Image (tube, rainbow, N blue to C red; front, side, top):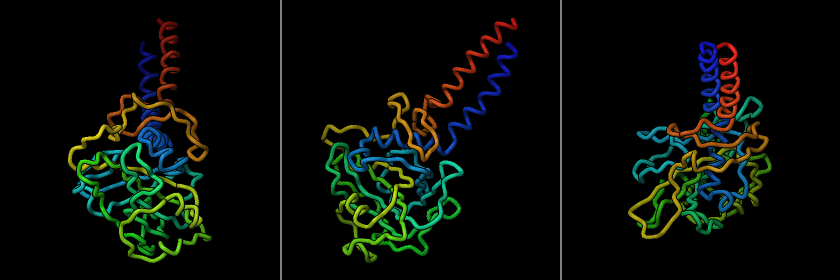
Length: 269
């Protein structure tokens, strides 16, 4: 049994490191996007190569899909980006967008644009727009009262040198309005989604019957297979600290090691 105790002591730091790794947390965000309906209603595919974290003063880092009040998310947030692994470079120019994907099941071909900045950079794991062009300055979430929880999605796109903004969205200081996000991406020549995350805001109490968009619990998630960019193909789990599951990578390893440890303990008994 002493050998088994030593084995558990050796396993636990490994499991903790796995669950805290950017690649593992990215898998959780992918699962959130699928369960909340963002994929495929807003984004047909979602295979990020980096982890995007939304931070509001007075609130801190948000977990994926976290419910917050309109007042809490009024100020412009800090956006932090962390590569999935050492093979991912976060250099060059990017476009940052925030859209209201509305409630689950709604038509997302036309979404409300709350933020659109071209030419942002990632410096020290933070998005910097000091030399960027703000087409639409950040405008905090403002869902209609009683319309249910709205999903506000913040997305970081690769912006290649061939990028050219459509004429109607090429000048700064254009206010909040409806637009077709996917058409904008296609027409401007934007590249892949590097990272994304979302939050939910509800004003008043909805009288409609809507699917929940609050933070997802791991016990409710179906397995999600990651693409090549994260370097992992294990099942995904969300990133909340209250998660009741350490994820496919850590859990599978623990099970295997526990079996080995039990066999070793019996042999030594």
